[in-house]
Image (cartoon, rainbow, N blue to C red; front, top):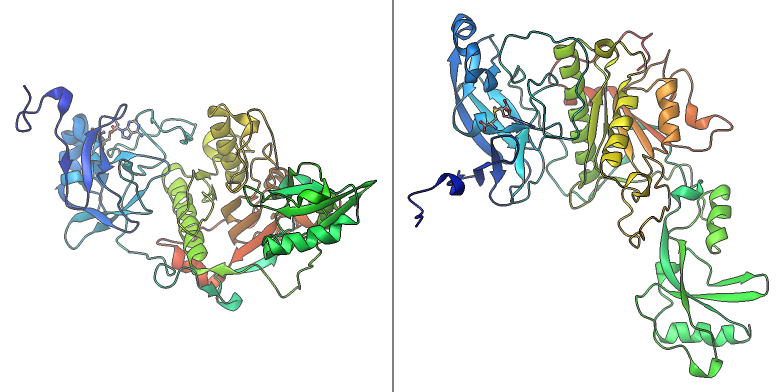
Length: 496
Ligand SMILES: C[S@@+](CC[C@H](N)C(=O)[O-])C[C@H]1O[C@@H](n2cnc3c(N)ncnc32)[C@H](O)[C@@H]1O
């Protein structure tokens, strides 16, 4: 019989710390740290005291032992072993925990970067040069010659500057005035001018063989409360050839239609989810159902809430951190690109992808950060076995896809998605983003000589291209809030 005080190997005890972290065995990474309950974002889950080894001590002894897989490079070049939970966080390329050094107390602080669900593993990012094959499908191994770092496994913890997201505090639903946004809009968001990007909702429609019955039906819609504003962006009546049809509503069930009119059975139809902002969009949407035309005024950009800015700031911060790491550890250009999980008011959900420029280590001139990250996403989709039949990200409000059905851009990689990048993408990358139907590109540094998003040319405004995307540039004064280290200097002739 097994008692709780006599654990067996098959029923190992779980160690729970006061912030809800549990040590458990993982299937493929040895032990790991898991959330024993929901752990909110920005929770300091662990403060690990460290044990320091001198360089000589480490070179002569520690390095030749298992310690080599557990040690951090400390600020002064000594090696640090985190005591407590600190040594048990496994690596992920999409970490949910960040860590920072406290040199005053010789400890490392581990903080969640997003809400972590009960049962989820808590992981940190070790760096780009791993000494093991990661059980993490999103990881892109940097190719190239092995570099002897000689100094333990984990990435160096170099600074103790605590950077906090300026949008963390306050009402997350508050709309931030345009002049207080951390970026400028170089190009407004596009309207849906591409059949693949048009969002639809399912609505009930009935064909009305005798047009004289329309008036009676309009009165009936009022009586049963189906004349609400949710379909206000559409016209109620469609006349197509010799059939007149009436839009009834979007309720799951319909009340019985007036029996005396002898109408055919109503049916469901995908209709546009919003009005048309441009003439090309009007044509496309009206082909589905007659749609209202409500052109946007020039001074009426899409509002940004504090919550969405908080998301964008975190995304850009992580992009910058990846670029710094790529340069520091692999001597790459400090360029990184990030396709984040889409923002949701309840918190970003889904998978995000981060890649760096790898053209130096791979000796491959086309391995730019933006191309690498689009490929990472494509590989992920392919690995899921759903390939082109994946629904577009952010299409959660639509009816589920039938097996094998392809709809609304599911063949495109970036429909409805943002790309954050440290430097304005070059012409080649801008074209790749255009082909992938990206929604918005956000960058920190403009590249006047090489950029394809406003620098030397602006791909999405060229005549003949079949997709438009929005372009945002981080403001110079807002930029430095995001860096912990030096700016990401790049020669102006480099194509990012
Ligand atoms: C600092 S330790 C982490 C705790 C370790 N799992 C344990 O049980 O002691 C680093 C070691 O964990 C394993 N590891 C960490 N992250 C991993 C990952 N994503 N995939 C596979 N193994 C991983 C590797 O063996 C690595 O040498």
